[in-house]
Length: 462
Ligand SMILES: Nc1nc2c(c(=O)[nH]1)N[C@H]1C(S)=C(S)[C@@H](COP(=O)(O)O)O[C@H]1N2
Ligand SMILES: [Mo]
Figure (spheres, rainbow, N blue to C red):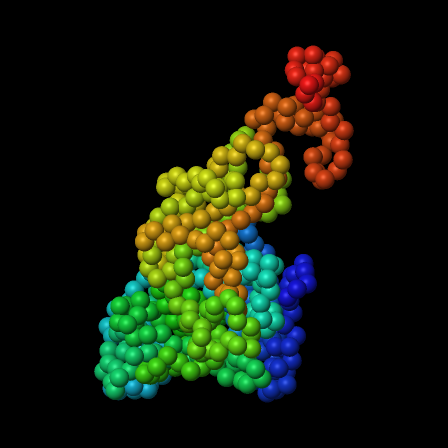
């Protein structure tokens, strides 16, 4: 946590998780190897593999916002365990708990249009760990965040899903009974937490289901759901953090209270700042559901040297949870004092459940290091805190402060700068590294003398 992030890919191997699976034995022995095999089969070769097992990966920066809809091989992946290999015709979904008529459904039942109307939606999934690396690199949190992956800006992706509304299935079971208010969702893989093995289990409130904002999906961007994204069926909770969108779902149980499973109860909690890890009682934490408005600059990158004509071309994304959407994106090149609006026509189409990608030629007159900052205003005029620290929290979730990058600006609309660039180019001298010492002659001796003849001396004479 306090050392540098390794530059390997996979960044972290996840040996402890592999060993726990090996130690449990039986079918679980081969899960870490199967998981990596599936990654190599289903994901883009350029994915940034943050954690090999459980697999966590995000697309490289240049590809995150290359398209407003992410292709399946480039969609980020956040796993807490292995990737269950499920045979669709042996699989079924159980609905039980506080429903009038508990039932089991095959995948054919769920896809039967005569039983359940189908819906298609474009949805952005954002992990609440997105941009965590900014919190880690400034102030590492509890050490056990290490296996939770040092996400950069790519733990957010957008896809078009086909499925059915969970509300219709609940109705088919005769509705909820005896004070049921939440639906507990069970994922099929083995998840190990504090040396206990269990399933991935979280819950969502019935009000969200009732609003038709929870889908059970089997198709992603017109393709069958990839194994790594939850084949044969996953939950998609519109506008909530990714953690609630359970993959490989095989059981849905109606319950009275939010799930007591450790992922609901002990993880994805937002704690106030000034309590140590040993004071973090789960009941002190807010269970994270809707993500606040956020944004990120995907191009250029921090530490890039940019030769430009007084405008730096910037690209990125903006997103707001809970059915809100980005209305305005702004950039600043003076650390956040003055802001320029991204022209509205340079934002991708708005949707209630999707991010907007954007690009802009951002005015930048000065040369040398500049800090470019990006922030978004959503349709409810929520905007982002300006510093990482102001929103820092235990668990390092929800990094939604204005995104800052430092770049080295070379403005060739300045005549001397252009002349120097020409000089270097004519002689085949590379500009990089900018830290190389270089003799620069900007005035002749006589120009210098001339100046002092015409101006007051450095020190007053009386
Ligand atoms: N069964 C199961 N479902 C899961 C997870 C998991 O580990 N197991 N991870 C969750 C988290 S934290 C996120 S951010 C999303 C990521 O979805 P993706 O891997 O399809 O991008 O899946 C969610 N659903
Ligand atoms: Mo997540």
